[in-house]
Length: 251
Image 1 (cartoon, rainbow, N blue to C red):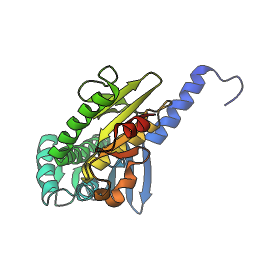
Image 2: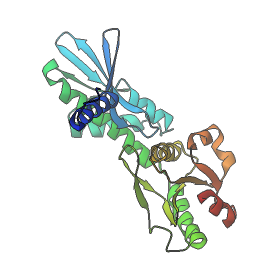
Image 3: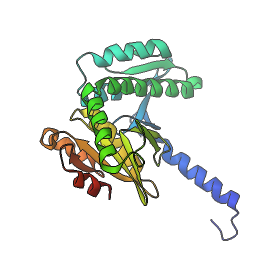
């Protein structure tokens, strides 16, 4: 960029750079992989695979939604049942492990869009079902506790939302607004879906210019095992800890 570059030039460069970062491609053999700006619950990007066929191309999610369901510890058969319902709605196809369409090269853009959205919808539906009643009960108990600790004027009523650095809007258990800072408190059960949801939200919120304090509230630290490390960059406290620990976590 030259010294005489105009603001329009700088905006153009920023847009082009951002576009390249949002959509990435990689060729492996005869297959192409396209990373899209959609996130699965664990924070990974939705990816589609494009393969040449005798009559055109085949676009699939290469089994990524299936593997995401496995990582979420979903009940056996969850992927096939959910994917079949989504496929019927969106006009794509599904087999035992993947979502796909057969297409012409002229329709590649539409095929990539449909497969990517279907793959994301499948994992999102499974993830939402996996959030157990324990999460809701823990969230309600947490809100009551925060009202006692910080007072009703500081705690947003019901569940709250905040925009992350990605501009995605996150629904959170509670947001505490103090005079000099904001603290996010998220109730997290030891189920993989709950952990991934909190982890993804925390990472996105931590990238804000002035990030809030991030606090995960759990029932029992020991029950999380290695999944506990996924809650970084948030602080983790147990729901039975004293009020002073909640205040320190928000400080």
